[in-house]
Image 1 (spheres, helix red, strand yellow):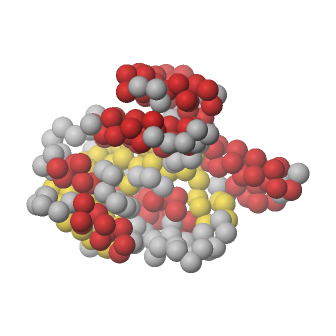
Image 2: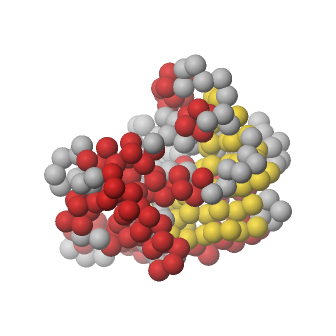
Length: 276
C-alpha cells in the first residue's frame, strides 16, 4: 500500500520534476523495506521527528504501540487529525537531542528518519546518541550522506559563483553546511540552519560506541542519483515498473555500491543496529 501511494505521487508530478519525486518515493520505499525486515517481536515503537506521520500512523494502524515524537506543534496537530480514531498512537512534543522523558532501552523499535538527526545541526551527534540510548531492540536511522551534500554544495557553488567556495570545503572536511537562516526553524533544528552530514564511518562509530550490534550502515537510494532523467521518467510509468525499480535500487545499495552517494534530495545514509 505504501509503495502504491508513493508511485501515485510520482506519476502525478509535472514534467521536469520526475527525478525529485522518484528520489523521494524510492527513498521512502527503501526505508519501509528496511523497517519491514525488523518488525518481528516488536510491540512498542518510538518515531523521532515523526512529522506528519508517514511512518508512525501506518505502524499504529497495524497495531503497534507507537509514540509519535516531533518538535513542531503544527506537525503534531496535523498528525493527530490524520490519526483520529487510532488508539495505539500517542503524541509527544520535544527536541530530538533530549529524550529525557524516556528511560534507557524503553522501546522495541526506534525510528529516527527523514533527516531529523542531520537537521539538528550542531546537536546531530547528541540526537543520534539519544536515539541509541532509548532503544531496547532495533534502531533504524537515516541521515544526510556527506558524499551527496558535498556534490550538492559543489554544484551550487560552481553554478552561482563560477568557482569552488570555502563552504564547500567545510562540508567536505566536517560535514557541515550552513543554510540560509529562516524564520521557520523548529526548536529541534539549529537556529542558524546548520545541516550535519555523516560519513558511513562516523555513523558506524557512534552506533558502536553505544554498544549496539551493527547490522547495516550504508547508502540508501544511490541508483536514483546515478540514473538519467529519461530513466527516472520511465520508472514512473506504472506500479509494476516502479516496484521493480525499487527492488533494483535495494539490491544496488546492498550488492553494488553500499558506500555510494545515496539519495539526491533525501537522507541517503542508513544505519541499522540492535541492542545485544
